[in-house]
Amino acid sequence: MRSSNPVFSRRGFSRDNGYAGFNAQQQAGGPAAGTNPYATNPYATNPYATNPYAQPDVQQGTGLQAPARPGAMTIDDVVSRTAITLGTVFVTAALAWFLLPVDPANLNKSYGIAIGAALVAFVLAMVQSFKRKPAPALILAYAAFEGVFLGVISSAVTTYVAAGAVPQAVLGTMSVFAGVLIAYKMRWIRVTRRFYGFVMAAAIGFVLLMAVNMLFAVFGGGDGLGFRSGGLGILFGVIGIILGACFLALDFKQVEDGVTYGAPREESWLAAFGLTMTLVWIYLEFLRLVAIFSGDD
Image 1 (tube, one colour):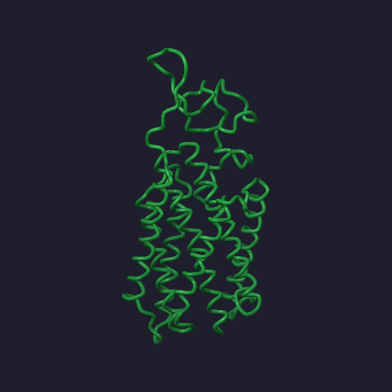
Image 2 (image 1 turned 60 degrees about the vertical axis):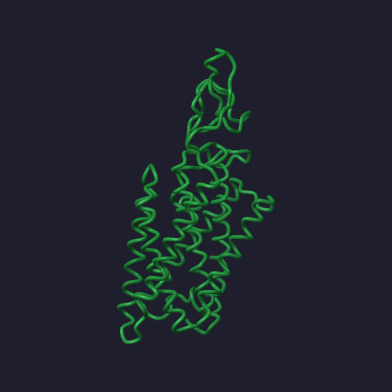
């Protein structure tokens, strides 16, 4: 991940804290970026305007007016697209739960379906991440396959570990989301360049460590290096949830700045995509913690 999620990596922002910069050059003839926090807004339609949203007043011939930019992203757009994406995850997860029950006599088949769905979802996520524009069909396809993966894994944990694992994981995920949102709105969390760099460095290290642990588990058997079971599993599960919370803060910053800068409405699909990826991450970490506390390796 190159930002809070891969989909945001090419869409950094340069607001009052100097966080990234939308990768856009300064507007021709505009004021210096240090004096105008919106000077690098890539969506400004008049490169000579001090206000990046201002348009020439063609009737008066002089002066500027700043009407609302048509087709700009709003919070309602982000909320609706996120609801659609998460709804797709929920529906396909429920279908996988009931139509693909975990068979004790053939666990390999069930886990094979889950792994296959996860791989397809990963490929779709990477394809979308490198596209210049969001593709709603691609994002919803990712959500559908991610839902199949979550449905099978959740069913397995519920069947073999704890009957209440899924409600606990969902409640934990919702609590983290609400807590980070409140903290962000109250400005208890300030997303700065230093914060961004720390989170990304920690995330890269975490992902690489988990990948090494998985390789040891696949080729060496057992729990690999033991980072996902026992006491170490609890520690790294908590670290994973904290990283997920940090990603949410980065996501909220991206959404806030996108609305402030008048990003195109289609960008709301990318916001929904990023938020969905983060929430799935947090849910899986909670699910693993529940499994560990319930005595599962």
